[in-house]
Length: 208
Image (cartoon, rainbow, N blue to C red; front, side, top):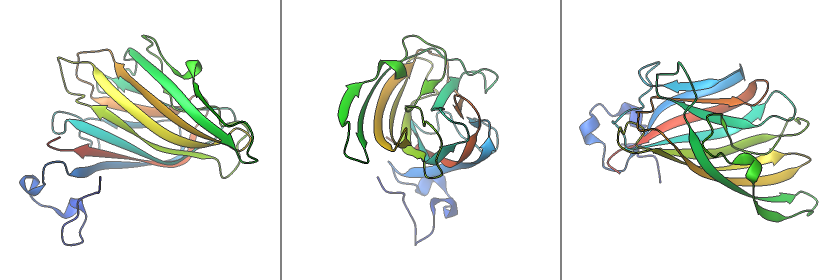
């Protein structure tokens, strides 16, 4: 799905929302980490939109780099504009991995990365291990209809990680926030230490 452009201008140059075609992906907010403890997208704060304006929201993660050894990238949801990030979640997780020296290729369900009615942060990846400068994680997360007061809040994650003694790890995680309250904030952080570097972009998909 391509980002819609008008006359070689970005979507931010469009002056009328009515002119955005159905299915267009609109950039809402970009956050860049610099030894950041958390990166949070809160509806109504700093131009963030996370309500019924869009039925689907997409978070893009670009080179998320941890500041601490043996940490993982995580997220959680809030129903009280970020006062608490503790929505109950159930999820599944599987991964494919392969080492740079062609060792240990595998595809497996990862029980250590799933949740069963847990309120803690959902983990995206395996331990980064001893941090090297080129270790990072990139990927995306879809969040469906977070403003609904009828249905649970489905999410799907795909990401790729270099870490843990030069293993390439490709994770697929899906689940739902088990709440019928509107989700109005999403927070990302490492399990320990700061997010040393990386960019998260939030998009909305309209008319989907």
